[in-house]
Length: 273
Length: 128
Image (tube, rainbow over the protein chains, first blue to last red):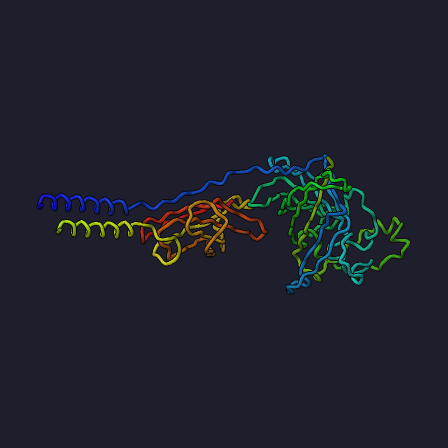
């Protein structure tokens, strides 16, 4: 009887010891690895820029000290050479975008007409207003990419911003382009397949991009320009007078909008298949 | 008869101990904590930087990736976070950060199992 009790007690102690040791487990940390997925977004020279569904908008504070924003768009803009985006090989990306500065538009007639203030936001002479720029080497701002890096869900596009045909703040001769490094923040919104003619056949890919570029106007415009209120030429001068068109009177520097300005791009491209 | 009583008593203790060894359900009400730093790969600077005010979410009851979370905290200005008062059990921690340009950064997350009652585990996450 005594032997049985002893045996039982021993067994009991062993079980208890086992349980206590069993309870002392080690905490664990299990990092889950993200499987890198290379995107397949691709827009090359075979795609067409869909200008009708694209836009370039500008945005700047009204007066330097205000928090209220003034906004509007540019009516004339494009890419030259064509836009190239290759998600799986970012070295192949090429973004060369331009806007015609005098096509600035606020949607407010009191500011948009010839001789009105809005063109001076971009340092544009009123005399350039009605000129048509086919492949703008003048009256334009260009962004040209040099390299593209992925950053989270977006792309950082390093490059240069160039304003053409304005007097440099340094007093350079008229027409000297001003080129400075700039960064474009680009988002690839994805590519979808569409049925363009209602025959239940999806026949057109559409790719969408959004981008934002912020710069200081004073970096690209003549802040010393004080030629106020250039007389608006007669309609004949505006539409055909070569002398008026070649008049190198540049827009006055204005503080009606803040020094800092942003261009927001929404660009759509399509390809039939 | 005395032996039978002892056996009965022993069995009761065994049942009690095995009950004590069972994990309580994961969640608040304990003394464990998870803390660490959240960094993101900044494409502008090319550096790995602290993610200020990033969202750190924790899911109770699993150490496997999930999209359902029970609690979310924000990192401080330098990217540090801490989630306290956790009972032993399984947890899954994930972070998300949006920079000033609206670019989002995430990680696949980390599973944690607290087997003990009073521990701090350091979990640092690098967001891409």
